Amino acid sequence: MHKKVLLLAIPMVLSNITVPLLGLVDAAVIGHLEHAWYLGGVALGGTMISVTFWLLGFLRMSTTGLAAQSFGANDTKQLALVFVQGVMMALGFAGVFLLLNGVVSDAIFSFSQASEEVKHYGQQYFSIRAWSAPASLVNFVILGWLLGTQNAKAPMWMVIITNLTNIIFDVLFVIGLGWQVEGAALASVLADYTGLLFGLICVWRIWTRKQLPSLFSLLEQTTEGLGRFVKLNRDIFLRSLCLQATFTFMTFQGASFGDEVVAANAVLMSFLMMISYGMDGFAYAMEAMVGKAMGAKNKHELKQSLVGTFFWSLITCILLTLVFGVVGSNLINMITTIPEVKAEASTYLPWLIAMPLVSMWCFLLDGIFVGATKGKDMRNSMFVATCSFFAMFYLASGAENHALWFAMLSFMGMRGIGLGVLFIRQWKKGEFLV
Image (cartoon, rainbow, N blue to C red):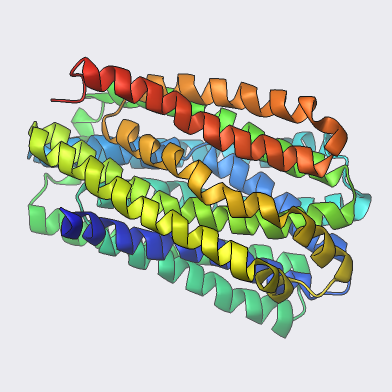
């Protein structure tokens, strides 16, 4: 049981941790420039592009769940269709975004209360990163499909290669050529297309080995099962909309407290992303294992997946708590040399120390519900948690940035409680015992 969990989870944890590490490198490269507004601009623009792309993150989650169930049922035709439908949908969304990205950028930044300098560099970053949309969205589908086929090594190398490419170009463009914010954005665009090329090679190898139907034979069948795919994507999209509303509010509200606060929050949010991406590795493993077990209608395998993944997630969260508690201040000092930013970040560090053990449950339960393709339950529980986020912030708003971090901690806790109640209720009814 433990070997199966770790073979899926460890590659995904390792690859996912490189994503916030990439954010830390971005922050470190920009954070050593002479003004805080460069770091604030990258934080604001990066958050906005992440919000826009991750609102479409349902492409990965729905693909993982459906591909894993098709893989467990040994349905090669449906497995191939899931990939084709996902790629077509991703390219469609990317095309719309490229047409409207100027309007989207103006609308988003018009609501920001950040300084003019931060807004200027944020828009500059956003306008360049927009061109990575086709690669980023198709990469979601590729990652989800590869994971659904119980292949964790290919997604791991795909993410690692993407992020290493980004780091190399970051250093070259920002430090070497002095392109500042524009260089950081261009580095990310080139990295996304590098990841896309590697991912397509991985898909082609599995496609050939599994002898899946040819793409031409699938073109006339692309609408088969599309209704279920669209419905699942709709529910996960609404869930993602609620999730990103909280992170967007965190960035914009933090910006209203001053340039040093928004820069400090950018540093701490990089740590939060490290927690999120690390825990998502176990959530991804849960998605793949639960989906496969339900597709194969194997009760024993389903129970093993739940027990094993919860055990190793707990160990990981305890370690993360110790890391932030013991060396959190040292990590802050590594990222920025600006005294005011370091002081602000250290003030709010305790919220990050409490985050791993509180947030663990929501990540794992997300994995269970994605693997079971229960999008409606995910949507409803996320809506309740989002309402609690805004309620907690406004109740404690006098504490300003402390109120923001208190609301975020409450939000993570409510996500876990909501899905936990639904899971226990459905388990007792036998809805998970396929």
